Image 1 (cartoon, rainbow, N blue to C red):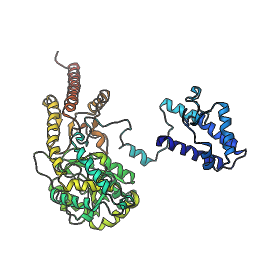
Image 2 (image 1 turned 120 degrees about the vertical axis):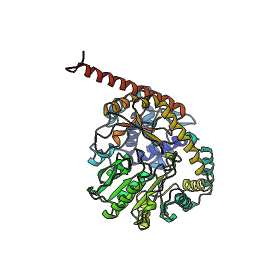
Image 3 (image 1 turned 135 degrees about the vertical axis):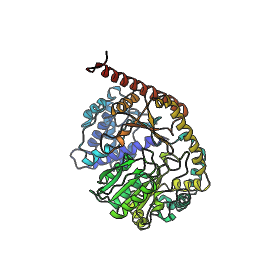
Image 4 (image 1 turned 60 degrees about the horizontal axis):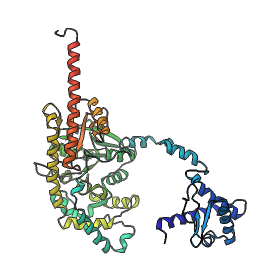
Length: 520
């Protein structure tokens, strides 16, 4: 029996030929079938050595007489495009001169573009162009300093696979159909208990909507609660993923500065419809929003009739201080939508997140999500519910917290010689990354470029600002890298920074020495 892929290809060939012989055209059917097969052989769409369907099957599927099919096949055999093998069938001839050849319309230009590594230019919308500004290049791959990447090597994969197999075996048939429940009830109940106890979130299970990651949550909120042209406050610097979702929704982004106390709400700010914040651990600066700022933000949202999107992306990982309660727990006006994700505490490929909704938005958001995105992954959700309820969630979080504390210390050790002579690092009391503050954009650009040459990806801090040029620096993820990788990449970064600093100091001294009036 042939492999499924080969059988599928035969089915597709038959479908293509069926459309061709069905189209109104002049000439005998056998001639049209002959030309259709020959064109596909010459274009390389039928690989040399692959077997064709039998003449009986072709006749049946194409609704043609068998003699009509045989006439076309015999002509191709006579010309050498096909060959017959006794007892095996009819095959595409293995003719070297056909390799890479093509007489299909447009094929030559397609091959030329492919060989040149080029693609035809397309005219994107202005919104699409802005959106690409927040999007990484397709050639970028996660590396040692990738922000937000968890320790995939520490995830209990064997346990997770056992849970997945068990829940797949037990899955009810209705889970294979369309769902509008807002997520598996068991997962929403487990999440509700976790959020109320660990994050001081006030909610019922029915207020939790399971989505395919935080990004989908942002997109749903923006589409349902805003109109194109509405204003959104975003943190400066801030998370590019949220900005991308709001740009895609056609919102006008207004950058609100972040200082040591968090988002700085001022009386003269233009009225927003949406406010996006990371109060527990601001991304990327790492500061925690003070109580006074939180209360001021809630007051501003009430005053303007705005919605607050609280992105609580990595609150589980705190070092040296207790957990910070969620902003949502202070909200008495139903203005805060709390967004969480499993990408940081489990693994990004899980593609599951959640939104805790104000009561008034539960039904609209659930219906809109079912319409726009469809609900799915109920087997995964069910396995995750047991993972949480059985304590497998809290134990890995504690282990990861210890692991990340150690990896952050390792990165600090690697950079210590540079810190002693002026490199400034963020406090790192929480989260999965540090910020290395730099003196100028020239140094930032030089380090990023040199990193690419050495296979080390660096995230420039200035790109996290909506208004250029932004403060220069580097956002250094450490959670997803092994200790050895941190030593290697951290040592490289230290040496490069010290070399650039020495060059800058030498240049400065030379400039001073050559200035008029300098001491001989």
